[in-house]
Length: 298
Image (cartoon, rainbow, N blue to C red; front, top):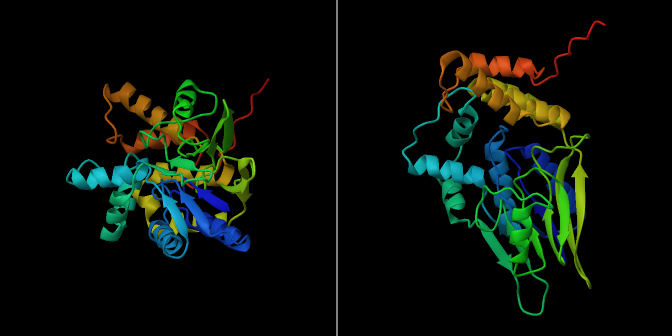
């Protein structure tokens, strides 16, 4: 039995299609989908369509991620607090393109699942951790080991950190397939995992697949996402171009700049000029390209 494990698609339908095509070529008919299907990249509708196709025709084990929870909570709380601009514009762009079918699907999903039939090797799966879609599990960290000690099976599949890795501790293993939609590797290839069942248990294979990044960048330019969230879209495109994620650093810098000048800052109300300056200080332009750093004159 082989299972493909997808996580952190983030609306990158081009990367998702490439990974599905790869799995089809391997004859894989079992999938684990670990959440964060949407947001950040513009392919909201296409991504959801592909997920529904997988769900209809193949065996799928699915949980929701923190991004799906953002969407559900925004709807339940009266659709207030998000607006156009780099603070929350990307979330609003995504929200406006979701359907009732999507919301019902998200709402039906658990944050944790276990497949453990009798006389077989089982597995567990979640986005962040078994108890929180937002918890970060990095290999060799105390909270990760604590959760591993409580596992009911020998292996847990999780995402959220965007770090492709496998960690073994006291005979149990956690596997992060990596970020399919916003990968952090020097090749900028989409990341996922294939796990194979063998006599000694599950064996993971960490996969990286090339996809059409140029088509994705063009979609940013034509979808309207760059108008909804100029600097955030630029930071996301920079990750796609380079495999280096500076979005958190840019967010924190924009908040610091706002607070220094205004004396107060409340996300997501951060004026766009601070986002633009934060991009500049990280040597990124509004197309998500690197700005040449000045040379030091000795």
